[in-house]
Length: 428
Image (cartoon, rainbow, N blue to C red):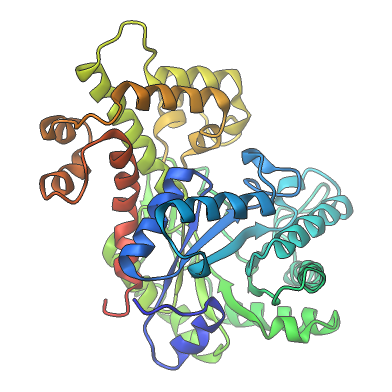
């Protein structure tokens, strides 16, 4: 891949260059390491995005502010040898979502403070997401109000970047934004954004930015979030259907300033990811799919440890995580339903992967550290890799993956990233 500036992605695509970029939305250090190693292998920039719930001025569920998150990622980059100049930092779903239980005035004040912190920390790609209602408002807001609130947040970001002496950011806009983290119900059909709705979204934001005196900022908007007909739920995935999105894809010809940004592309087949990029969905967001792959690897390694290092005193990782999630259910309770074994299965194995909220917890970290210490740097036999981590067996057999615990965990995320790398390649 040839490196490019994120600000140029729409211009280059409309000039006839086929390209895309994966937006890696995760705060897990092993998933970030995997993304940076993928970038090294591809010779490509890496876009790492933090979401409003993960990282904000209050610390989010990771305990990190935007400045802290940037330092955290740059530390991983230095350790693996990835050039920090090729890192792109983005903010995802920046808006009132973490505080939507508050009145809109309070929630927007906090959202302003959050996006200012992101801009001041050098996050150069900011997704403005004000599409949700706050206390006393409908769940979905009128487009004009969504756009006005987005412009307000852009103004805060512009001021913060200017005060910090940083280049102004680029923006992603939209009014039909999928729920962060996947759907919370069974899926059988999705409505693709109508072409006229996508064009109207651009125009309503153009007017709102102009009314706020932010025409220059709108000139740096590069992406529009639309619904291309992809989503995942607890146990199902809706794959991309190019025929259903043909009209939407054609609408890009009337929006030369923009590419589409596709959310919830986790678990899409490789051919679907390639088709998305072909059709102008040049920014592919993925997050839960990466930590889902990591959780698969960690649970597989726990089984390996039972075989290679039997210890009656060792608590299985799944048991430790179940106890933690039951003791502190706020991370999953409002997303899952059912009872008994079915509910327990969702806690651990749902595609929405709400277990990812728990990995930063000291109890979870201690359990994973204990597992890694138990396995150490000893090579794991290929037969056990085949049994408990089958997606990694070919890599181990071919000598591309070292069969030790930590490397296998990182490689599991790389396997999930591989189809994104292929889809975004100019030669695809």
